[in-house]
Picture 1 (cartoon, rainbow, N blue to C red):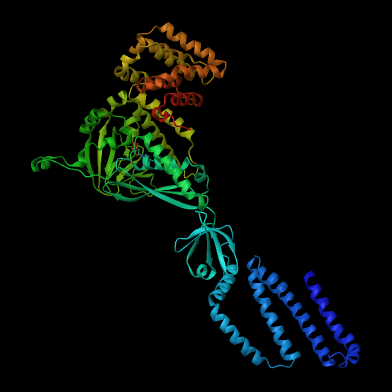
Picture 2 (cartoon, rainbow, N blue to C red):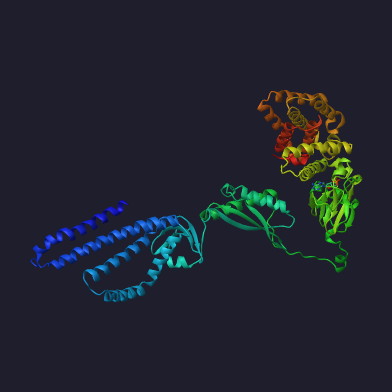
Length: 620
Ligand code: CMP
């Protein structure tokens, strides 16, 4: 309101002059100094008009622009609008003075001014257009100074100034671009800082068909993860298949960048990490290729259909098998075609086979009626089922029926038993699946939301593993005895013995004390296992006890020493696995592998560069 005081005082002064001073001065003048009383009248009336005009301009500015409009649009009224409105009001004052004070006709003035305005308007129509678009942009505010915009024609940059005629940008190449408001208002443009500053970018990469979806996601998403500027944004990155081409799968990596100017830098960073990830994973970007088959028609006709070869190798569960084991098992597996609705296994039945779905879709329901509404899971090609009864001897825990016509293979316990003994990792992996499925079933049936924890899964997987070994009458150590044969040549060295004993000691003492069963397991090793038979039992137990003593004190150097002994074995993955199996045997000697023991096995796995999942222990 303070801004109204000055014009009000001027108006009061002008009125006072008119009322008080003019009657006094008028007789004195009376044409004496070439200034008649009428001139004085006109002078004082003009003063009043100007003072009143000044007050009205200030009131409009204060009440309409600063009060009403600002309240409505919640931001400062553009300077340009205020200037134009003031100019119009002053024009009205001028017309008032000319017509009322000086008694002149305004028609002439208006006509003259319209002609002048028309001439000026025509000459400066672009400028006037820019002015009005400038007002529109200033009121609507689709962007602000500091925003990053891109016009339809590809011009893009940071807005550094907006005035009554043009919008000024600075481009990424540090060039200054001035865009008339008329162009700005009539072109389609994108504001990268609305509704939020960060936005999505993407690039594509072509990978071979033998890279699975999971592997592609791991490789691509981890590259984004390695760039904190992008990964720390609230929106997660995603990976999707863009196209399936004869030369490979085109994957699109979608990631977020915090602001427009950094987009190329961040994209380059992600791509560099991707190249590194591909290098370490031994994966190459797919190349264009042409296959030349030089064959006689006769041979081509005899060629076995592609679909028949090695369906088993594509199932994760059997990934560890070598080609001979795979083909033996494949030969033994019985193919079955199931019609839609057909039940393959039913709850409560005895069963000792495992099934692998290769084509179709299956439904798992809890009761013995396949038509019931509760569905535990749908199984896709590549999934297996029936492992629970096969591995534990329990009756079937669920009913599995074909949703559409499906093709499955049946593998019996007799086919699988020799492999389970030779390849303990299969039993480990299966126990994880068993645990996962059991928890999923429990959560569906109990209708609870609680997510099962890693701990639940591991505890249950450990229990299943014990059950499997009991049922198959085998054990970690038996499997050790069988699998050592391939590596026996390289194992009869002292470094291996000390590393094995140090690692076993670390697991045995992990829960704070040594169990009689754990020491017995170690002592047993020297009697029952060939590789250890070459060594002196007393020497081996001496190493074991020495490390136990050092570790018992909780001294960090003691664990460092264990790792120092163990680390060289990482060069020999076969031997490293034997040490880890021995550690699992020691951990499981008292019936279950407790969390501290699992933690010790995880740390050893890290030093030996082997995934703990192989031993049924999940990475935390
Ligand atoms: P089994 O109990 O031998 O027979 C029924 C099979 O259904 C069972 O083994 C599992 O393979 C499978 N199954 C049980 N529960 C689930 C589940 N929640 N998700 C997927 N498969 C399951």
